[in-house]
Length: 422
Image (cartoon, rainbow, N blue to C red; front, top):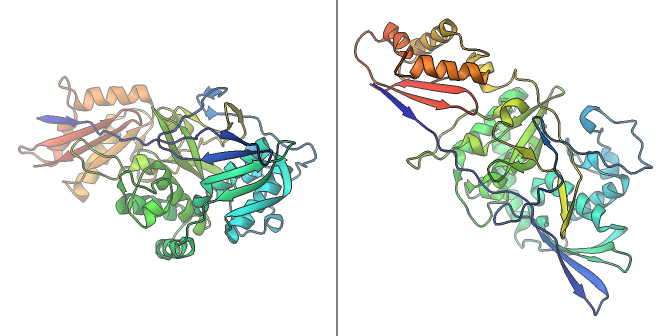
């Protein structure tokens, strides 16, 4: 008897709200309000270019900016002296013009010494300000309170001042977060970067329940409340990686709704990680840990994650500001690392793998991935369908008597999971 179970992945909302313009006649200024919130938002998708490899935009640079430090994929070496920061990886900062970097640097000063109102030394157009503060907030997950702000412009349309709502208990909250984070990072201090990434992925999923709450856009929802959605998951993962010296960024994009996830860089190569989708909510309400979207390539990701969002929204207009790396290396995916990856359907190779896992623990869940999508469909047909059910032949080599088993197929990533239950 065979039981096919489908896992339901509960997705979360992400995105970007539209800037609101209000004229203040008394000051002859424009007050602009902006609050980024992944929930209940309007996501602008106009002018996006989508292809198999994701979302591609032009790198807008200031004409006076040199490109001597330009690396492949549009990244540059961080000038830590100019920014006065010890941060290892400022992915969005590297794509800014010199004017935008100056604004970014002043925002960094505000993060170091929080104030509710700040007047800029470097005045810039709204477009440059909006690009700089979006880049800053994505590079610094600890700047969660800086997502909610208002800014003023002068008669020339340049931003003069910005206002924030600084949490009264910000220092205490940050200290509590860092205590937890330091413990998590310290637990794998001597591990390889890959082992650290996997540990952080596992820890967040085991620690956190997927659930809306009042601060689910911030990493505090993960570290302090243990309940979050995609924004909190991705920013918590980014912060753990940052503290461990691992290059990681949060990205926004579109699945069947707006969403957020990460990429990491190891040894000059890039890999997608979706921690939220590693913590699916099943039909019975339970949550589990899976590795379908751990250290994966563009080819796998963009079967379900349809585009990347590199746009900045100002009022009714938007423009493309950021681009993203190509992720083409499959060598660090969970299934490759565990000897459970088969590019095409090979009955005898799969048989040997399943028997090996049965010998280790006959009642464990046994998962393997087939890279080619057409071959995966052949595998499902021959291993699990009523017409063939070859998986029973493999199980019978270990269980000569009567047994029951479950089977799970995850078509989007080409993964089959089987388990003897009795």
